[in-house]
Image 1 (tube, rainbow, N blue to C red):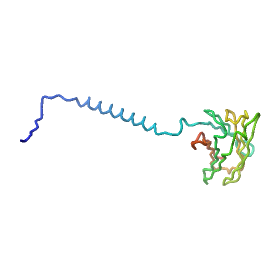
Image 2: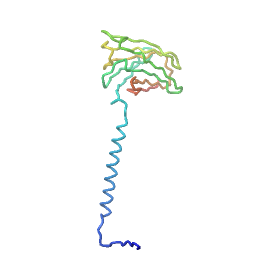
Image 3: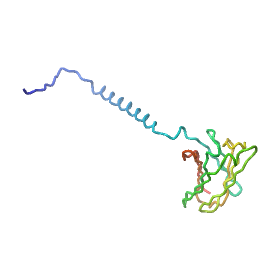
Image 4: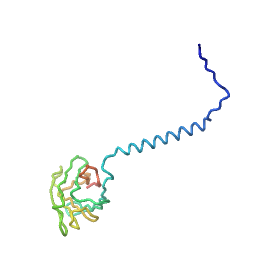
Length: 171
């Protein structure tokens, strides 16, 4: 027995306008669900820490005043200076510790690092002397800077290597 399909001419369907609206609504809902799912893949351990950096001229280099957006200790910070133009070079300081910076009063940590255009020296001033990065704490990076070269200071969060703050300038 052969089946024959007949098209009913009296059945009513959804109008094309309503169908289009339904398709757009379904697409938006699916996109929102996908967006929420993708956000769940971020396993960086929560909100990234942040530090605002301001630069000022300093005898033999630059002074960088820091304003953290969350509580941080100096042990959690890695300081990087990069010469980004014309040569690409960098120096890293990652040995700052609360034992070095802790205690009462102003504490300064000095250490050197070799960069393409010469040695750079980092001095950190912890105003409260408690080993925590607080508003107003500052660091100076002294050494030779080549005029016209572009430099960048980056503060990294040691736990995951994420950038907490950066500042770029031309010497």
